[in-house]
Amino acid sequence: MGALGGDGRGPAGAAPPGPEVRRRVVDAVDRYQRAHRWLGFPIAVVYKYADDQGGYLAALITYYGFLSVFPLLLLLLAVLGLVLAGDAHLRNSLVSSALAQFPVVGASLRTSIHSPARSNAGLAIGIVGTLYGSIGAAQATQSAFNKVWAVPRNERPNPLKARLRSLILLGVLGVGVLVTTVASGLTTGAASYGAAVGTGVKTAGILVVAVANVGLFMFAFRVLTASEIPTRNLRLGAVIAGLGWEVIQLVGTYYVSRLKGTQEAYGVFGAVLGLIAWIYLLAVTTVMAAEINVVSQRHLWPRSLLTPFTDNVSLTQADERSYTYYAETERHKGFQTVDVDFDASTDADAEADSEVEPGGGMTQAGSAGEPGGGMPEAGSAGEAAGDR
Image 1 (tube, one colour):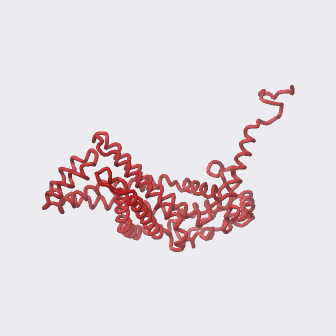
Image 2 (spheres, rainbow, N blue to C red):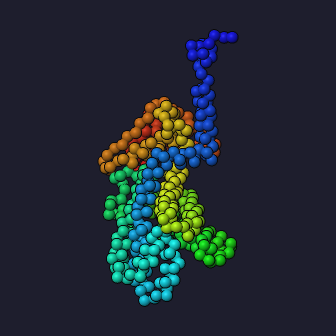
Image 3 (cartoon, one colour):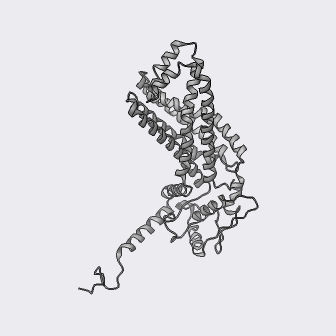
């Protein structure tokens, strides 16, 4: 038997096999994902979502979206109170059907709609609250898209122009999302209210709503994305977002139908928490779809597998382009220069990565820097200024 080392784990001077094996496995996985688009592209999207703090961007959209829901409900009550003031039969029918299903607030809604004297105040509060929450959600979405597309701060719309754009978005997307959500609910939850809808009608309704969602997202991505980006490069994200919204709408409708008849004391928690989760999933889907468009259009893949976890890593050209864009995002003035450099070792590795052909899975369109030096100055990396 050979002599053991001081720690008794093997021959003297022999290195433990564990770390070496792990390193080889990680290197093999890294090489594979760099060479195969089906794996490398999703990894790059997830990494960019994490780099942009996409979860926080979606949370801000969720906050304003949730903030607009209850003022919108109050606005609906005020409008119904005014419109139905002279039609007791229709008012009673509405009260005993849809409005009665709201957990906890159902009883209040049934009594409030009979009080037209309060409609004017409710109308004013509802309009103000709905506009504040809705414009806030649109502003948060614009900010998220600016972050995702790495638009420098000095090139973003000024506060007045940004809010005007938000109003335009609200005028189209607000009505569109409301219609598609209601249509999705009618096709999947009609049975909960005694309506018989055939399978063919349900399937056709779901397909129509999905196509409408895709069209809405094409419009949103076109408005919120720099005009220099061709519209054809936005189609992938719009399709994914539209289909994702339809799936989430169907799940939300099923969830609400399960809450029907729940005691109000318990239903409020399910309704409120479910609403927050529903809005958050919609926001995450939107941000993730935008990330897919950016990674695809700017060829920000493949990424190094360990780049989010350690500095002891060899960057790819996609890594260098990504980090250059992140730095340029913080440019506040047009006469401000942002210069990004990387060590020669990482540049050499990126140059070696670029030798792999796109057909093998490594799309490296354009160089992020010179082979022997650092990155180009702000505005020239990946034609950043032109992309926006």
